[in-house]
Length: 429
Image 1 (cartoon, rainbow, N blue to C red):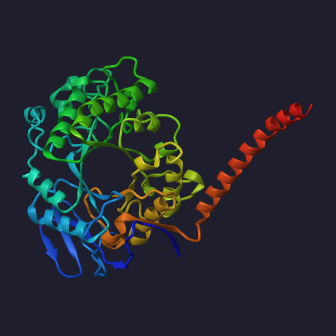
Image 2: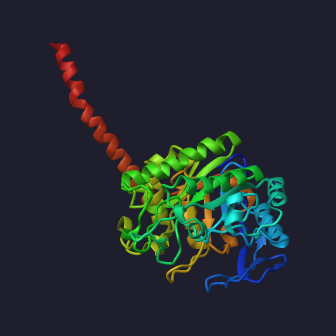
Image 3: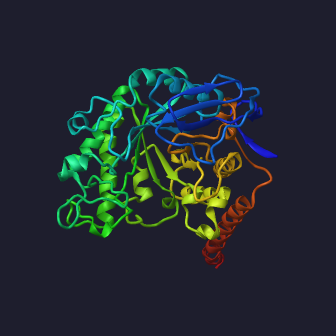
């Protein structure tokens, strides 16, 4: 039994699975399944197509909570794949499309950005994107342009003046051999912001900045920046400064701004060496999306031996921590819909993460899969997007949270009592 939080919508069962798999550009459809395929990748062992039926799914889409999925440039490209994605949105609680506009390889998938054309970074992977955005909006779908910010394997090589460098002046690369833009470089920031402006002009509702941070992988001790006084404080100022400039440019265009941040930022008190201080960053954005993938947490995090096997507990603790630092209306996490490190993720694991959000009062979320391969039977019908249900009876985590709140309130009351008693005593004398 669950406690219901909704907006005058009935709840009906939904049993089916949607699966984006990867091998070639085709779409197969029947009454039970929808299969999207994108070029150049192979489906993972954990991905499968399971038959199912839709019961009671209404097609009217009143949007209250933002619930989305990541769509790669390949899925957003050919017309048939676009149509299949729109069908998924129309048949489920999903209503938000997060579309790759610039990935970490450095390619830019929208035209009209002069610097990208000059550097050879423009890729025509998403043709007629304005037409695509119009169609998404016709179907009530909220559109988000995902832009990888400082990790970029094209522009730093073309314009070394924008690059993070080695002590000897050569361009620095991370452990995967990818170059990075220098977050202190005004030219680098201007380049990214020009992409964001163009995306808004094309019709995107929101700009989502990913990799909005300093490098974390590889020999970061060798990183040299244009700011000779680089430090944790300076790094945080650079990241926040970038977001301030994004506000100045994008808010007059009525665009929303969001950021992707490490899951650890929900409880970390420092910048973790990457310039991400979540409280300072939150001030300048509409949504904060911690990437709370259970598979990416260290063993014994929050006292949990194997976080990858505890999706509910990890996401619950992360949301609980985030809400102490981020306003509820700005919190919209990325959840895990992929198998990693030998632990298969399917409907049970995905719904556990979603429920952990709901049990903290968080109704917005997004599912991440780098190849846009999603578990369809983990999604409810579009009747569900205007509400959610908390666990009833409460989970142990919910009970512990309430106990902690009660204890804190009791301590506060007791600490105030001596002062109040003293005042009474003086008055009596």
